[in-house]
Length: 418
Image (cartoon, rainbow, N blue to C red; front, side, top):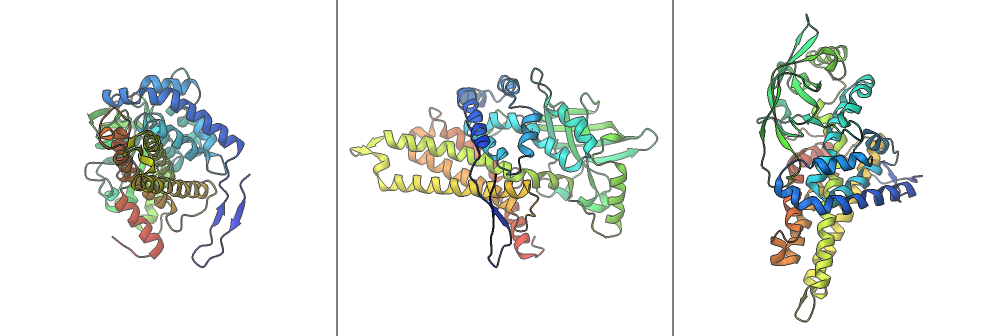
């Protein structure tokens, strides 16, 4: 069980956990690590080159229960909060592109959980993953060409057809993981434009719904085994029950927003990102650790000036910095994960802190690893080149580093910083 102590300083009243992993956590870590080592890593370079969704790897993950609703639900109900970051670190230690292919549906599930009713979660969450012999995919669609960090600029519209009890969606989403190839899409859209971001809602689009199509598939710098594409909605009609949270709750929230009062609910996309930022940080930690371990091993074998380069102070100090940064990032991720699992408020934007520091650590550490390897690190003969490409997205997606700093600054100052 997790041990709690009270931090008694003048700046924080948070409850801090002890991060000693239980036997269950250690078993989970070793199980996922084995899959990452034996299945993901041997296939990573091939799927990066192909830039295709790695269906055989996802199918194997489904077969053993790693790609399943049961697996992620079990971690979500872990009161220590550590199961999810432990599993994600190991997966992304294997490879970030394949890792995202395995966990992409979990982002849509998080959106469903954050915005949907218990009945909606019970009906749709299992369909997002499918079964062990027939895995399915889900996609969370929020960003648009003019609405990335600025969610208030969203143009996708949802209009209610009362006569048919249907919602009609029109617009184009971009940067959607599994976009267009997923069985289920969760889409954020505007229902009352005059209310800005407070006039938005989330909708679930069932499999085979007419009016939904894949647009451009993006050729990316990194995470190339993960499918990223536009999702085009053209008079896309969905049943009224597919409004997440239900129409009654939406009407109440919109009425409060019109009156200028608090809606009592975070903007739908932000509600999803608040839940997932520590998990994204854990992914970045896995990439950074993989690059560090590669550099450490190489430094012990590469001989220059008559001795292994690890015995040269410049290289040794670089490795010391890398390890320190990784451990610090992991602790920030674990703290935020524990706080989320125990419903502790992020009064200092601890979720954003974890994502910011871990993402920038991944970029720094993979760059340093490439430097330690020298010329061979710049080639595809060693995986650090791919890791460096993969790491770069972690200062961009699910909130850029600049947005994370903005969120943190607002939280600690109380000022309306823009």
